Length: 395
Ligand SMILES: *Cc1c(COP(=O)(O)O)cnc(C)c1O
Image (tube, rainbow, N blue to C red; front, side, top):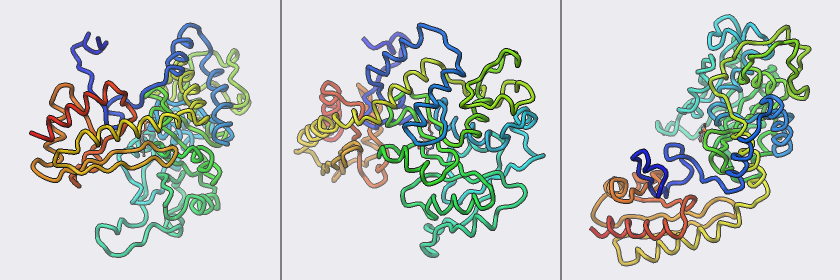
């Protein structure tokens, strides 16, 4: 019996992957155990984040890091840190930033819905370059000089949305920004695997990098990692922690926060609304250890087997199946191309409305394809998924 039925909510079959709207990634048992164990005792949250910083630093090569309530929260906190540094007056003013540098320069092609988190901290964007793909005006991407031309007295930093084929490459952008003493904040929320990205993005000189904890790392859905420069991580943490303490008594972890640089204790900062629980921190750190050890790779063969089973079961139906193999870290995927009858949107809607409700990956619907992501599948769900696919594809 599903716990969700207690509240009249039917669980679905998620063949879509670690998408947020369906609850993120499945947490391994060790992660759930860590969550429960952490719930049974009290610890000072700043000390626990200090310990998290050491674990994250080792995993990423960054000077420091904190657990946030998601990558988007990391973007907001990272922006807040860049906007204020250790300036208590500025911390108190956020998100109102008229009186100090608050512009983030970003390539137009990097603008996306998640950058709302950067704006929510009080930053405003100065867009550079053009999005020329649609116009067909050429194949030029944003160039470093375009960023440089936009830098001025109001500039606070640069936002970069990570992509292996980014132009200009991150290392070049970092060099350009650092020549003007400007920090670079990188959104790498969904850029795992490959595991090497945990270290290589920081190694290219980025000042702050965010990763999702509830995607490939398989921590709690509402977790993320913000890592990078120690002074900025300290400023981010100051603005996230609950500051209901006395300055004289407060002993923040020295490796993260320079108390001597503070004239007093800041009030609850803009990140106080993004608080993270001790259980989430313990669970995320446990998941990070599993992820970095390569433990999840052992499931890939089983995932491919289930996808093949689905493809075999659809052989007599008007579809063409293609199994996209794993590269050794990424999940294998099954693409089901519809060759007759209903559109992919119609089949997708019918799958969602049926019993049990099935949600496939929507990434290729416009191209007439249903994509099956095996992350949430097991043998029982695969059998139910096959039955639902057969029903909707043969009707
Ligand atoms: C998923 C994602 C986010 C948000 O991550 P959360 O951990 O859900 O907050 C931000 N940016 C990009 C590019 C993403 O893919």
